[in-house]
Amino acid sequence: MDVDPNLLRTLAAVKQTGGFTQAARRLNLTQSAISHQIRRLEQLVGYPLVSRTTRVVTLTDDGETFLTYARRALSALDDLDRRFRRETVGGNVRIGVPDNFIGRYLPSLIRRYSLHFPDVRLDVTVGMSFDLRALLDAGDLDLAVAMDVERKKRDGITLKTDQLVWVAAETFRHVQSSLPLAVYPAPCINRQVAVESLAQHGIPWHVAFTCASPEGIHAAVLAGLAVSVMERSVLRPGLRIIDKDYNLPKLPVGTFRLFRSTRNPSAAVREFEKLIVDSSQV
Image 1: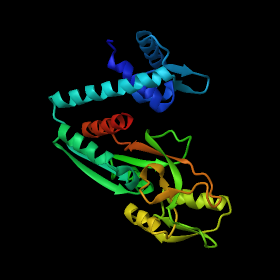
Image 2: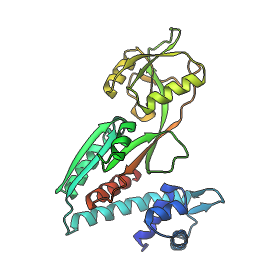
Image 3: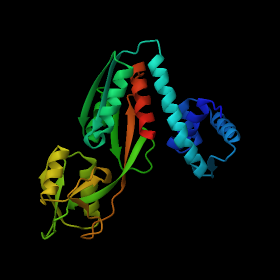
Image 4: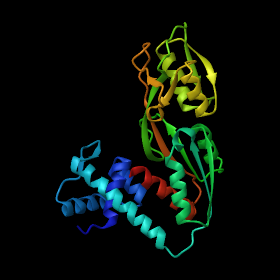
């Protein structure tokens, strides 16, 4: 099947942004152009890929399956382009990421970028989501990944979502008059969610342990000193989810988004932005 890669990028943008209007803004096209490209793609494939209603645009089951292969193809094409591109991309890229986003994902991405663009110097800052957004707004970062829990938030590019959960040691038993919490220093999304959720449901709580390091929070929780709010994906052996215990309220989904400085981005910044977005969707 001979498919124009631009059609694949259009489908990926519609999925990522949730609509034709938002996809048009991201790709610098008109909404009618987006509609036309989706129709062309559906004609080539022979299946309906997008389901349209007056309020929501979603992919059909065939569309989701097709997009999985499309993203792999786009990633391979981008790697090919970077490998054999003749012009040199240089300069600096200053990126900020929160602790709970790093994992194994970011180091491999940085290594991949450095292989493609050895003349670019990367400056990575690890911190809290609130702090990183402030650094970006102040012009001290070119790109920032930050987590929020606002379902209707539209700015930034969505990278991934992760359910927030109440976590405790497998041996933890709540016997105090108020719930002991292990939290990051304020301002912190996880801390804010925990405190606001407990306050709204009238559940007594107190801060028993404060630490800026994920290792410290995990250690305190594993020791049974307190409970904490974490992303489901970061749970370790010895921890358990206690969402249904102690009348704890259900927590929202955390969304990691990529934000770019409002200043005109350099080629190096644009390439890193594209790489991190494409890699998060594979």
